[in-house]
Length: 137
Image 1 (cartoon, helix red, strand yellow):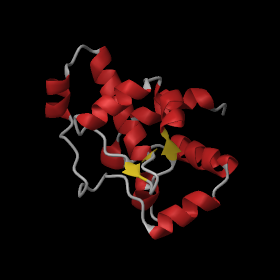
Image 2 (tube, rainbow, N blue to C red):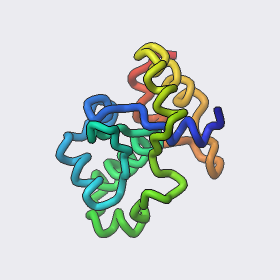
Image 3 (cartoon, rainbow, N blue to C red):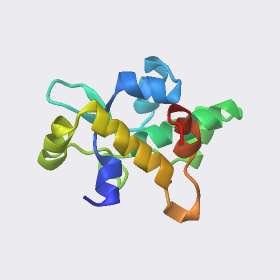
Image 4 (cartoon, rainbow, N blue to C red):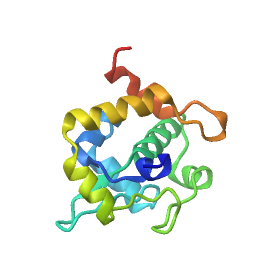
């Protein structure tokens, strides 16, 4: 499975995203309302977030902590659309894969992502620093 598909796979329910980002459900839904994140929805209308969504939420959190308002964040991080390359997707393949994965496998996948880092634009991912507290090397 390619890295882009893996990063866009809908994996995390809002409860886990809250723990990973230290944001409240209300904050996360607020950012969704402003189209800064676009989680996928299951048939039961449950939000599922991808690695890209978690990383984007951490970027938003960092900007908020620096005093940037929502309008400024929208300028820095362009609003997402469902057709965006980074939009979280639920398709048949990803849904089957998600249901097959145990929590242990999901944690291993997250750990690999953190330790491998995000090689886009040659930068270390913000998600790596923020989420590394959950794993000991």
